Image (cartoon, rainbow over all chains, first blue to last red; front, side):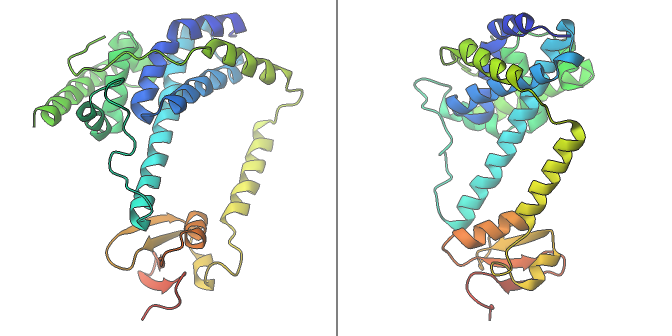
Length: 161
Length: 115
């Protein structure tokens, strides 16, 4: 069972990494922060089934699930706004490039398939090994490697093109 | 961090741990937690309430279909759950046609029957 002090220690250690991953799904600082908080809360609600050794992987898994859900919902509503002509959906989600990633990088990340995006962001920001990323995303280690490779190739293509 | 693509390692907003601790305190004070069955029943009730359109907002045929396609009448269209389609049709303020996905027939929702 996970104790509160275990969870708080995990927060201190992992908040920044999780926040940076969430930021590349939401492109909104407040929403990214909220997703991180929500992920920790969900892990806490499952504390009786989580042991400290697996909490890390479960945490990343939870954040990814929440972030993908958020991204899918936002995509639908952007399409609705475009359809109804009630808003300009072009680049309205981007973060200011002087504080965050370059605009073309944000667009390229957003263009990646969800599976590749999840692996790439975890590889970039979590500091976890491919095996640990595989445990968190329920993927074989080999698939983690191939998805990361594919994501990097696609990013290079998008940014060089 | 691998910065080949210029990904910046951004600092999260300050005070995250305090906010989490407050949330955990609230969570720990919860005297009664819904079990899975209770939560599922509550979710079902909420979903059925959301998906049930008031009779005045959707034509009768729409009530038989869980998914409807909304179209601007020209070329753009989007398939949505019935409740979402109903809310959009009621609030958009523009002419939106509801399309019966199953039968591919178009019937008007917000601007009367389509010619």
